[in-house]
Every structure is written in C-alpha cells, then in structure tokens.
Length: 211
Length: 211
Length: 211
Image 1 (cartoon, rainbow over the protein chains, first blue to last red):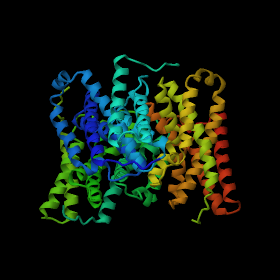
Image 2: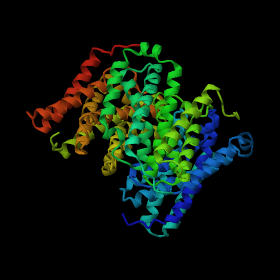
Image 3: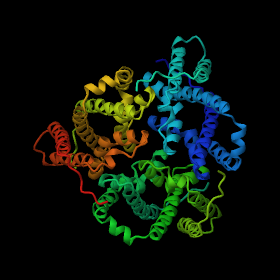
C-alpha cells in the first residue's frame, strides 16, 4: 500500500462535522428513552465520540480526539444544557428528514476519516476498511447498547453499514488509481457514502431477508 | 494548571474503600437479576473496577489498578464465595440506607481519585473533571449494561453524577485557590460529594423533567 | 513464577480453532435475534474475537490478533456471506450437540491461550487465571450484550466459566510441577476444560441456587 498523505486539518474538519451530527442522534435517542439530563449528555457523548474512541482504542492511538479537543466536549455539554429544556421545540423544528440527511453525511465523514486514521497507523487494507465502518457505525451501536436496545444498524435490514463499507473501498480504490488528490478522494468517498445512504433510504431499500 | 502533587498512598486508600462499596452494589444487582455465582462475581468485579478501568483505558494507563493489586480481586472473589450463600441474611442486615450511604462515600472517593489520576496524566481541566465523573459513575453504568438495564444513573433524574461533577470542580478550585494542602483538598471534595449526594437523596430532590 | 516458554505457533493454532467456533455461536445468536447480514457479521466477529480483544486491551497488547491476521476477519466475512442465505440448511445440519461440543473445545482453547498470553505479559498468577477465563467467556458475554440479553454464562447456573477457571489452574499447576512439556500442559489443560464442560453438560449439572 502506498504511503497515505493524511491531511490532518481536513480530517479534523471532517470529524467535527460528524461529531455534531452524532450528538444530535444521541439527544433524540436519550429523550426517547426518557433519560434525564445526565443520560442525554452521556448518550450524546457516546453517539458522537464512541465510534472514533473505539477505533483509537483498537489502534492504541492516544491522546483521544476529544481529549485533545476538550472544546468539542464542552460544546456537547453546553448543547445538552440548552437543548434539553427546548427538546419539544427542537423536535418540532428538526424533522426526521433533516436527521436522516445529517446522519448520512456524518456516516460518510466518520467512515472515511476512520480509514485514513487506520492507514496512518499502517493497518492492513481490509482492517483499514473495517476501522472505517467501525468509526461510522459504532457510535450508534454503543448509543443503542447504553439505551438497552438491539442496535438498529444491526437489525433493520437497511444498507447503512454496507454504504459505509462500499465507500471505504471506493476511497481505497481512488488512492490506488492515483488519478485524483487524496483530498479529492476523501471528499468524493464521503459524498458517495452519504448519497448512497440517502438513495437507499429514499427508495426504502432492504437487504433480502432469510428468516 | 499547576503541577499536582499526587499522593499515591492516599489515592490507593481511596480506591480500596471505593472498590468494596462498588462490589457490594454489584452483589445486590446481580442477585436481583437472579444471576449465578459467576454472574455475581463478574458484576461485582465490573461494578467495583469498571469505572477506574475505563478511565485507565481512556488515559492509556497501565498496569491497571486491579492488575497491580491482585489481592483486591482475590478479596472480591472470596467475598463472592462467602456472600452468595448468605445473601438472604446479608440483605436483612444491610438496609437500603446503609447501601446508599456507602455508595455516596464511594462516589466521592472514586470521582476525586479519577480527577487526580487524570491530572497526573496531564489531561486538560474539563477532561480531568469528566474523568472523575466517569470513574465515579461508570462502574454502575457498566454493571447495569451487563445486567441488561438502562443505566439507573442516566435515567432516574436524581442528582448523582451531578454531585460528582460539582465535587470535581470543588477539588480543582481548591487546588487553584491553594489555601489548603492537596490531601485536604482531596478529602474535602470527596466528603462534599458524599454529603451533597446524601442530602439530595434524603430530600428526594429530582432534576426538573422535560418529558 | 518461572518464565513460561510461549510457543507462538501453538497458540496461533489454538486461537484459529477457537475463533471459528466463536463465530458460529455468533451466527446462531444473531439469527435468533432476527438481525440482518451486518448484524450477523458483527455479532460473529464479536463472539469470535471479543474475548481475546478485551484481554489484549486490558494487557495493552498490540497489534490485536485479528489486526495481524486479517485473513481470519476475511474468513468470517466470507462465511457470513455464504452462511446467511443457507442458515436454515445450516441449522438442520448442525445439531445442538455439535454446537455444544465445538463450544466446549473453543472454551478450553481460548482459556488456556489467554493464560499463556497473560503470563507472557508478566501478569501475577491470579490475574493470569482471570485473563484466561475472560478470554474464554467474554466473547459470549459481549455477544449477548450486543444482542440485548443478560449474558447466558452469567445466569444459567451451569459450570461453564468455572470449568475454564479450574482448567487455568490445572495449566498453572502443571507448569509448576514441571513434569510435562509446556505444549503438553497447554493441550492437557484445554482438553480438561472441554471434557469437564461436556460432562457437566451431559449430566445437566447446576450450581446450587440460593435465590
């Protein structure tokens, strides 16, 4: 595998955007489970940082992203204080459509950032793809585990993790083909994942079931 | 942030006391879920060491406390063997009041020890506070996840994690003010958390709900 | 404790065999919870690698086994693609008896490999035994947590973890006695665990309950 020039600033921007979207999904899920303000913050934090934190623990990478950038933790903390009393209003303003779109963008950004981080840690290629998918979906998996639910992404038969999986291979393929800059490969792959997710959601595509 | 003179022996004493209280909560919860002796030991172990272990994994600190001190693991092991057959008697002897008091003391001790460990690892100040709260509450969170419950501390609307949160900032504030020794700051903050928790429990204070 | 000559090749063989058995338990459990193909792969992966991964995180050992050997991850990936559509047939072919036998063998292999890895990391003796038991049972514990069940091994009152526990001490004892080669000690202890598990299963032995 060729050496990957990781653009730290780009990855940082990617992760910030993904974090805010992840936190929102945590707010919604925690409120659905009637958690208190501590639960709302904890679940938002886990949804936002869980996937990246699990990836970094598996890669043994420290300091963790949110330890280096306590400003993002404080941001979620403040959002929790502000958003919790306004949750009814927030729910009315933010439709399901907005959440799905933001979540699709977050999935693409997290997954591609995860591959790049794994490559920077010299992971083999299939593991790098998996680290991308883990980064993309495990915030949600851990969020659902804490909320005492079977993780949605593992059971709803919708191509969510699979969109991320294909996107990680598009990113890896674009790097091999070497036709575009690494920046372009990152953004293209993240956009591909987000669009693929939205198209499959729009047409309500399901994996064939074999129950 | 000034350099924090961490008194290892003091923190060690703090952690031992907190471990025994944590294990007790695990015994009670595991029995409530009708677990067998393996479950009782596992849940007691997780309740006792889970918060500190998660903190150390996040900080990348090794060896873990319980790896360095296998005597505490053996202690919980022996307590499991002894306590399990006597659980009915134990339940009659140990009232809810005793458990709540011991748990409040454990919360204070764990949280303050967590801040001190995070400061020793040069964490930024908000992250150090969070590591304290994580140390204080995640033994219980992980215990409830293993027991397939929505974690109590995230949903009951009682100011438990919040007591720990305020106490970590009292500790940080006392260090800045520099009026008392670090030992005094540790014990004062741990006592503050325990008392705040007991007062809010006594008067059955709840966070305002926004369901 | 004497220095343990860890035979890497032997441990590798042990772990591969145990991984396939673990993955099978994940397939079965994920289908029982009506998960989709992403869930089947994830749960099989967690069941297969979860115990060893948790051990390595606790020991701070990297790279993880499955990161070094992406071929095993790809194997489970391919098995998921092949096995999912054929699950009905697989269920008819593979009886409960076969699963229990394979699982008993896996338990023995995982547990003994876990002790050897912990000894290689210079863990104290009781912790090494515990690391063996964790390696043996936590794939199943994590599998059940993701599937939103109280972990079977913690509640069914059957001597499963206890078989592993005794086996780890047999292994440690054989090393001390120094009568047989370390290879012989490894295989003897793994076989002891598997047989003990099967005998207790055959006669449906339960721990005395104290509910």
